Length: 324
Length: 282
Image 1 (cartoon, each protein chain N blue to C red):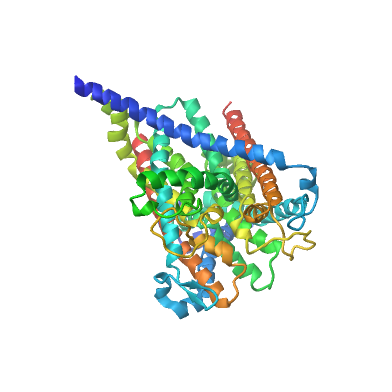
Image 2: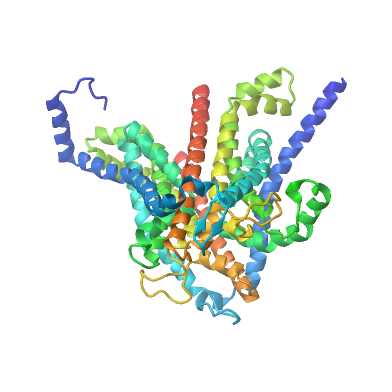
């Protein structure tokens, strides 16, 4: 199928003519249109969010992102408490899921026998397949009561001098939401970290072991740095999921549109305020403000996702280049 | 010598910790499943599968309309989303150039990562607002938007695993390219593609956020596709956050039905796929 460097006009038209006769050009065109659908849909999505949020953007401008009033009755909207809640819950989720996820990925890629490793990976993938609303259901009836009667009082007793663990133990709040998000993000961290660890060439490990390193030293000082981009990518993917996660968070965050320093306090996230208020929004300004928050969420997750994909892409290219 | 012992201890402790991490993550799955089966099993009964929901306060009733509603919307979404993604995937794998195919691939991955609630807003703007009403169609549209990138990427991925020699053999016999694709390449990759699509449909069936303000909810049978429609995930959400014990019981039962469906499709699809690969090898 290698085309000559200079294709004469007649040769090209002959090829197209041949293609039309056999149907190849038609198949090409049809599938091309469907592939282009993705680009069109994405463009349309951005345009739609932009246009629908026009009212709110015109009224509040950039202040929308930095004010913390949320009053649907008087028509005053500021997104700060929701942005804050989204960031805080995601950070809590990452603090829990990074060590757990990377640790498990190390075990699965470096230590576990292949059968155990693939069995565990399968189970972790199942964890990723559980719908978000099921996580919410379980968290609401198990995690919240446990946190209220044991977890949070314990944290207050031991770490209560920190501003993060202050105030009454409601059970619902940033911490519980972050914990449930951690469970929802670590399948991503594990799966992709494991893949990038497995792409590290064998020689690297063997060289370190031959120099007298222990298994852990070889892993920590040689294999992990080699796979760092992929691991970082997996963390970004997890972060993107945590930022946009809706149902589970909505059920445990406590729905309080205010900013609290304490992780035990109830809060709100962008996704959950949209979930809660969108269908019942009274004024077009309210709807428009919610859509503007959707726009913010969209851009943030797109950027985080794009970064993650680039990082994962970079490592897998490097890995395959080395192994071939 | 001391130094060596210290290093060995660190080695042992850290390796043990990684094993513990794995144990913790995997045990979460079993905790979730166990608790759900325990609570859901207590709550599920024949009425749940065949009756309509009752008003708050009354004990009993079921979610037959939500089960049917979910099936309708997921089915419609599959009808729209899977073919679009499938044909797009064929383009990427068989015709795609460099820049454009890369752009499509990257966009599909990004679209896959867009929060489902944002997809819901988009679907609301297109299918609810202009029509002045929540409907099953709008819900199905939202779900199909989530299926397109999944279907596109799996199709492409599995088409690319088909060996070059198969394509060349068919081309050498004089078949035009579209014939090669439709009767050689696609059938060879069909098992993988179907698996990926089934997994995608299972994932979408559990989605709640995009349906919240497209399909809304309904306590009765939806007679037409243009009416608000109940779906299992929404029912779980609404029942779980309400303050009635009997509703909580129903939420658990609905959770059990949903998770059973998702897990059975997942396990079955993966089993099929693994068998398919070993058959092709042997």
